[in-house]
Image 1: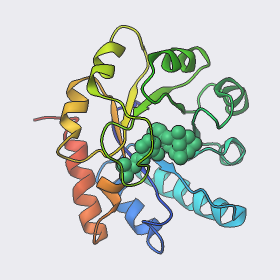
Image 2: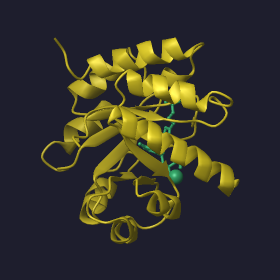
Image 3: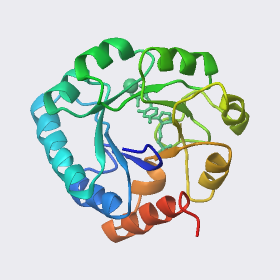
Length: 208
Ligand SMILES: Cc1ncc(COP(=O)(O)OP(=O)(O)O)c(N)n1
Ligand SMILES: Cc1ncsc1CCOP(=O)(O)O
Ligand SMILES: [Mg+2]
């Protein structure tokens, strides 16, 4: 699967009671990756929801990524995203196999991205690039980092943090292969609105 386009990330508060319809709308709108990001400890619900999301992703030709939890990703046979304190990328690669999509948070540091590449990551994530409703305290990055990545990081780059339809074009122009979005996609009044937003984000990657 080519890692280019919209990367939708779920948020348990924002999507309470509407996880599946809003995710389906994002997939209909063209999201290529979907990350299940749920910080709760309700294992049974997490497994149930992740299985339902895997089914939806299969139906729409997208790939599911689990945030933080390598065991859940292994159990479901799907991808994984790890932050700097979430465990080792190389251990995850050994666990999940060569085909799995595994991403790593690299904040605003090229050195972390180079290390992630050596450990077998499929993509590296930089950000937050803008003010984020979801994670306001995340270390900040700017587009100069994307420029500096050229020729140094030979993996798809995911840009995250406060991404909107207005600021995404600059990230893509500076080399982001994917934009990862929570609020700018899912803080919407209806599933139809999520689908429109996903479509608009996706269109930025295929300019006519
Ligand atoms: C695509 C993507 N990029 C970065 C993150 C952040 O991961 P992390 O730093 O581990 O923070 P949490 O999301 O776990 O709070 C991400 N989840 N996805
Ligand atoms: C998980 C994460 N890591 C850095 S910013 C961020 C949150 C992204 O959410 P939003 O698109 O709402 O800013
Ligand atoms: Mg994490």
